[in-house]
Length: 232
Image 1 (cartoon, rainbow, N blue to C red):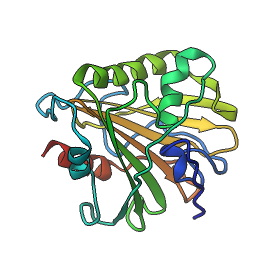
Image 2 (cartoon, one colour):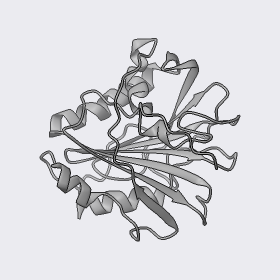
Image 3 (cartoon, rainbow, N blue to C red):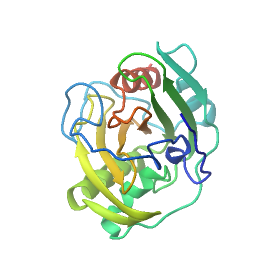
């Protein structure tokens, strides 16, 4: 697995064949996460509420997954906060490009990044970047609202990379207070799978790149473990 580091973004930092680079492939409707769940953009987990106020850096660090938290995964810090901005054309697609580059609008008050790599089990060969982002409640809700709106209007766009990117909604996992899932497929690359979960005032971004040639899928056990730890 070749790892290519791009300073511009968390999601494009892992990449061999996804979240920014690789070979061919096709997206799957369930590319968001394993298991069934509401369609992309639906609110879920009404009885599970994370912290309602913005978390500080130390609180986010405590809430982030670490070595030993999830069986079969190697988990390391990815402490570099994403920086930079790219413009999507048409503008309706901008929230998706913001997530692809891990630079949402508005910027989070605090950020913690992790890289999870599975060497065995169903997700073997896949690398998942996880970004925990602290907001106030209304801003966190706005990030998810923006993604829902974009997925209704946007099927393809240009910008950020010298190629056309197509977008496809996926089944969102039953996690946090609400979740959105989708796949982005840039020309000449494999599709990358994204899941964005809001728990209280915290937004958690998952981006999975497949190193096996198969379409990427955000592992459901990884999503569940991270949201459980955040809400504990």
